[in-house]
Image 1 (tube, rainbow, N blue to C red):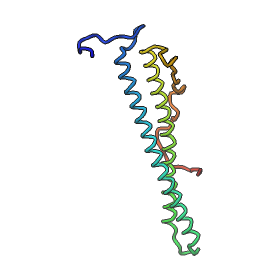
Image 2 (tube, one colour):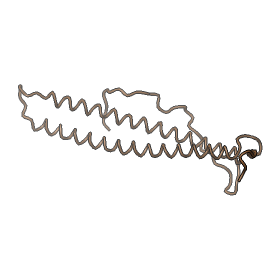
Image 3 (tube, rainbow, N blue to C red):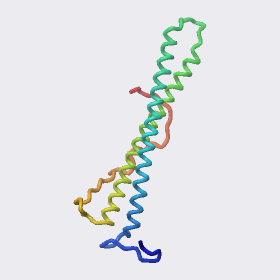
Image 4 (cartoon, rainbow, N blue to C red):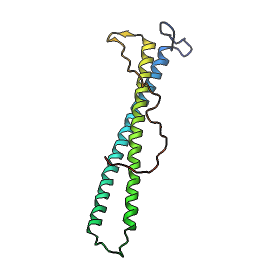
Length: 155
């Protein structure tokens, strides 16, 4: 174990000290794993939202088919419910955008972690040549930063 005031060894060729590089790589991987957990949570919420949406839509459609048409019948509440369901689709679009951003960020984090490991520990080790997953070429897969309800085509 190194003394606290002892110099931290530097890798051959300069760059980050090994301990700092390993610590930074660990933090990047923890962030990547947190994003994976967030993705699973979003997927579960989206699946539940989709199920509830189709269930409610089916019930409203059944109600409209069973209702006797008449001039005095007010379907205002049904119309409002359908508008609310259409707004729920916006949440599904949010899931799609969030999934793209999470995947993009995960690739970037893993690429950074791989590069840090390669730079700190060298190109080759006992397992062979270091493989670095290239980060995304584009800076951002989703340019939209807000959600508005609009006309939506169902899946």
